[in-house]
Image (cartoon, rainbow, N blue to C red; front, side, top):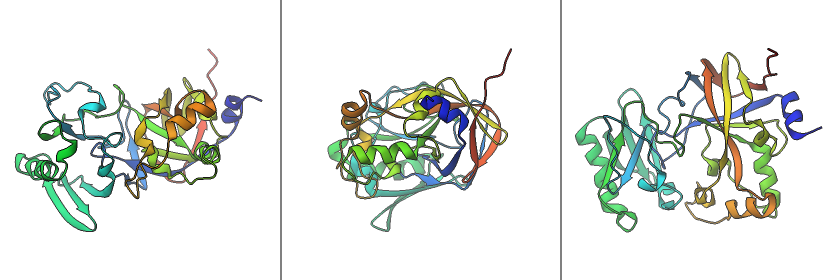
Length: 267
């Protein structure tokens, strides 16, 4: 039986659900969330911190490569910050070592300036120009130029730990929206083009996720302590771990929900 056939016959379970309101900053766990067709998780990558002029126009938002923003792949110190975003007030609060170091409403000039001021003062070595909080209405500052939901198979993470000689790998290194268990390791990579059913919601798998050096950063210690892309490459011949999917039917999903691979409809 092929791995994709095994996956198609096995139901997985959502064990974790996360959004990342500000690109590069703290994951926020969610118990349940409403998925809408063609959209990310609500407020996922809604904001980014521009690292020098990028040409981004909030009135006509266009995708920009992540190199234009502060990001974990190059700026691992971001992982030492604990940030929280409040939907009702658009307020971002950043803590370091338990103390609030910056706070502001990201939809106001004064609020954005408060956050930008913190990064100007404390991230000088990493900055290529003035840091600027960017937002483009419902734009998503994703690593790919489409609105996606990212999925990580925890069995693949366990297999990666074995490749690393038993070293523990924190799943949040992969900054996924959905963490799932129940699929054989790496079988999710064969699901491109398939449809996933979670309650009423439907997601179509569109792409494998090629991993970047951001995964080398431990989210707890902010240290660059592993070589994950290189380990994937030497063991598997590629650097893929996880999949991107697009929402094609609305529905609410939550931790503990089952994920089924839908059988293709016969025409």
